[in-house]
Image 1: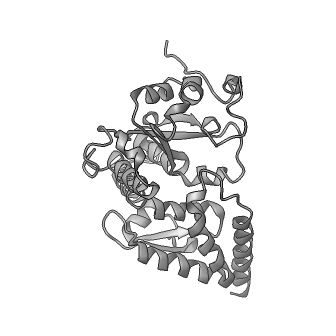
Image 2 (image 1 turned 45 degrees about the vertical axis):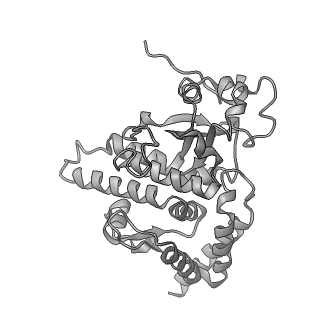
Image 3 (image 1 turned 60 degrees about the vertical axis):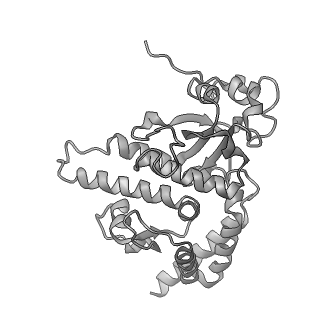
Length: 299
């Protein structure tokens, strides 16, 4: 026990140092700064203080699974051997969590996107259950699980009120989307980071970092809403697109969008977005085809 306690203390200290080193002004991370600061302070009491802090916040926020099971963050060791992570969450409400940045961002995502995370978990758990009878030779993750994993790890929502903006994204027309279409951003386009691995990558960003974007249509009035209201609308819309009735909680706001296959998510080089990379307004920035790749046409 002494060795395990010592290891936990070292992990807590390392996580505290990692959180202290983050530039929380980054556009992908700043929305989490206040909550992360409270969590960081809880690490003074080690792993026990950390989990107590997260779980008190989860109760206050009313976090639940899709089947209304209260959510609790527990040590990774609580996951029984051989049991799928998503299936365990769906069955128990327990989220196995390690003391590292990756799982910290995963927990933060639950607080910002509670409906979407619950919908992703329910869909993943259902897909796992449906595949349980498959033989080892034929078992595969399947298109739905692949898409949900991409969204959960590396996804963002590309909210747009302009069909031309979505067409530019889908067509890899980067100059149109980022440069010529700069007037779209914030008034006709807004992005919301969902994936916790994408958040982690923004701790040490690189130019070629590319997200998987769920393009959701929004009315023009959406872009005049306060940020917290936008986040709630996006959370409902994304949850609908994942597993609910499209438009059911958002008055048809998603336009019937469904996320069922990896190709339902569009590649988006985040360094092209305003404020996400230095000097991305310079001439020729989007000529780098190793980052801003042209669309591959089918033969």
